[in-house]
Image (cartoon, rainbow, N blue to C red; front, side, top):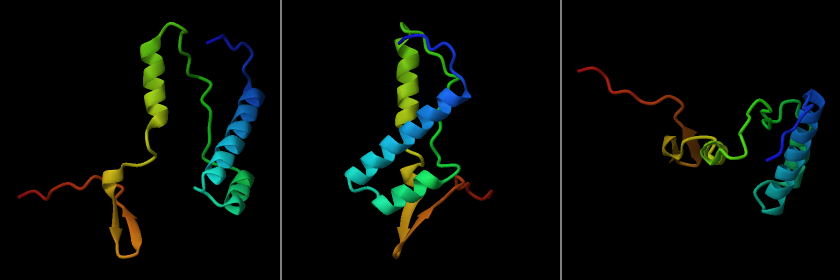
Length: 101
């Protein structure tokens, strides 16, 4: 890692735009997304892609780097909350609590 002095909002916005384009291109290339949908997503004002420039990890802090990578690799939702009902996929947002007895 190298220090990144002078990281400003314009630099972060440029990284976000590049990241968004590359990820969408990879999704299209792998057949996970139609190219017309990717093109539409590029026009979204809030695309769901963001870069947090406030996170700083020292070069020698391997544990912090691993925590960050594990966080980035998490799925966007819990698979155990997703179920199929007929032809529909249903996602349970809140954890179900048992009724008091």
